[in-house]
Image 1 (cartoon, rainbow, N blue to C red):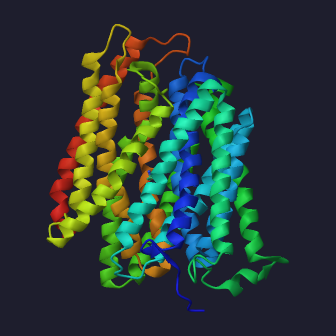
Image 2 (cartoon, rainbow, N blue to C red):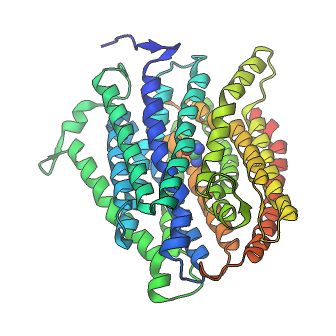
Image 3 (cartoon, rainbow, N blue to C red):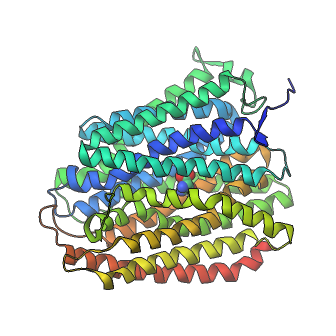
Length: 500
Ligand code: GLN
């Protein structure tokens, strides 16, 4: 059974299968995300005066749930399924979700989001943990493995908005969503071929295969899992539907999205309980390592809380107030992906070189830098307002420049964190801790929702005025820059303590 894992280009061969599977999964994820806000504000809710508020709320609810489920998906893989089964099931659910999104129907819309939410929970944390499991403890290749993997993520995130954004704007939204589904299907096929080809060696199996064969009420546990996953879908769709949609149906104003809010806090309490329990049963070193992960997760939350506005408010900003050249507002979502592809290898090379002279900054310092750069990015967006033309549009250069700061900040944090989580977590709970890591994004979407609502521009699609939206955006970005830069300052102060 202890067969050697095949190698390729100095890394386990499995890395490259996971690379392509994740590339396609992220292709579908970011292709869809590039269209989502524009689709809601320009199509589904275009005639409503508060379409921005509704769309921002749904975007945030979707984002919060899509990044909250990984904690459950990770736990399930640790205890029962193993990474392979979890990833396959998640991939199939997500592919279905994207295809359902191609159907032009309100109920289909929420069912589709729910399918992606459940699917992502099973797929996203476990494919990252799977990458980590290919490397032994202390293997110096782990970080560069994650850099390669992060490139895959961003190749998907770069190409998909270009393609889906083009299809969406030129041929119709549902073609764009359909293309995303085909991408996810490609991801599932790549992953499955890796399994069939024995590429992953001994890794990614269920912790106890026999346990999966046990029957409950005449059905094997391994068959119960997909059944329950599918059963969750209409439930989550209902939460989103009633939580987010009774405004247009009932006509109530001042809607706050309470249902998702409560559902979210309930999940949160359960998760905190599990963290506390894990902490009490862990050794002292493990406990301190877990604590560092939780703190890093909090910095990460602040970061994503600003960054993820790229899919919502910043996409609308690009649509309404940026003089776009060559690409449309949805396609602008590919800019950050391009930067990451260009810079990821350079960054990991810099970390290696700095390590060699013992000058590699400690992770908490890197995180503080990341926040600093994000704040600077928002400052650039705010500043762009001074260069607006008579039509209320600012030069695209500012969008490019602000996003450059976002992406540079991201490289100080996100890939570093992914790698650290797989290295620092006790082996039995890697999947779960990866879920906790993504929880930073789930929390972040509560910020994204609140900010998105604050920066909502009133008026239906036919009423909107570019000068009015420009004022809302630039003032908003200025405040965000101020808050994020303050957080960065705090992070610099806390970093030395965390290093200890
Ligand atoms: N952009 C990265 C990805 O898609 C990180 C996302 C996140 O952690 N919120 O994987």
